[in-house]
Image 1 (tube, rainbow, N blue to C red):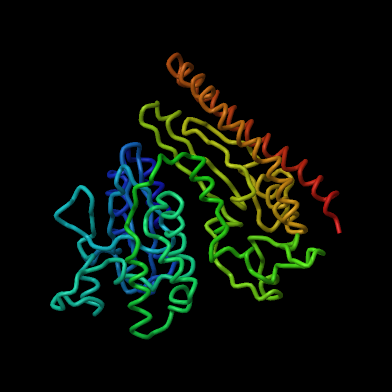
Image 2: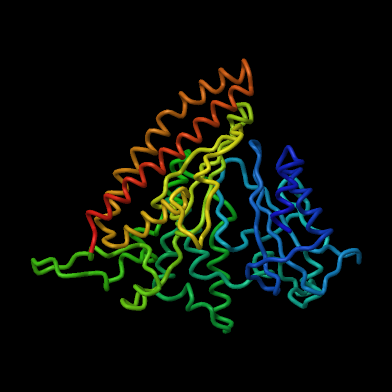
Length: 418
C-alpha cells in the first residue's frame, strides 16, 4: 500500500506537504502492512518526501492484522518531522523522530492515534511522568546496521560534532549486537546511544551531489566497522611484515566470512539493489531542475547516471532485468558481471574499475552546466525540444556506461583469470 500511495502522490501532488497529506490519508483509510521489523508485528517504514522548498521524514507503523477498514480507526500510526533547510538527515533503517511538539505544526504532523495506540498496548503510561519518545516506543533496539551510519554521517559532514566517544564506546563492546540483551542496563545503554545523535545536523560546509555519492559508496573505511581491517586478511609481505591479501574485499560473502571468521557489518553501500539521489532545484524549470542520480547493483562500483525529470524514456538497457536469467542487454547484469569479476583479486581489480568509471563520471559532472544551459535555451523556445534533448542525453550516458563496462569485463577476465 505504501508504494501505491507514493505513486498516487507523484501523480496528483505539487508539494511535499500535499504528498504527505495524501499518503497518510490513503494509509489511514486502507491500512498499512510492512515487511520491515518494528515493535508491533507489522513493523514500520519511513518515507522521505521533498520538493524544492522543503523535506519531511514520514515514519509509519502498522496497527496489527486485526484492523478492519471502515471501523472508524486509522489503519496506521504515523508521525512526520520537517528536516531543517540547512541540515542533513539520514534514515538508517531506524526511526529518527523522538519528541513530538504538537504546538509546532510547521515542523511536526501526526496521526490521531500516534500516542493512544501505545497507551492501549501498555507501552506508554501518561501518568508516569516520562516523556513520550516516539523512537523508543514503537521500534526495536538499534543495532549494528543502524547507529553507525548515523555516526558516519556526522563524522563525514560535521566532524567537529562530538562523535569520537560513540565510536570508542561501540568498539569496546558497549554497542552493536552485544547490546541486544534483555537486561535493564543494556536496554538503557542502547537507548542512550540512539538518543546521542540529533534528528538532523548542520553540515560544516556545503554538500554537493558528489559528496552524497561518495557517502553512498562508503564501506566504513578506516573505522571499527571496516571489514577489510580484519586481521585475518593479512598475509606475509616477504620482508618480515604483513600486507592485506589481494583477495581482501569490503564485500566478503558469507563463505569468506565463515572461512576467515570475519564479523559482518552492514555497509552504507549496498551490493544488490539500486539507489537514487534526488537533486531538486527550484530556480530551474521542473524538467531541468529535478534530477535522479540513479545507480544499480553495487553503488561503490557502478556508475551514477543523471535522469532529468523532463526525460520521456530511458535506455532499454535500464528497463531490462531478470534476476534468474543473464541478459547481455541488461545494464544491471553487465554491472553485476563486473562486480563479480572484481572478487577474483579485489585489491588490484578495483583499481582497473575506478580507472574506467571515475573519468566517465567526471565527464558527466564537467558537462552538467553546458548540458543544462543548452536544455534551458531549448526550453525557452520549445519545451518539447528540451525534453527530447535531455532524453537523448540520458539515454546516451546509459549506453556509454554499459559499453565501457562490457569492455572492462573482458579486460578483467584476461587479467585476473584463474
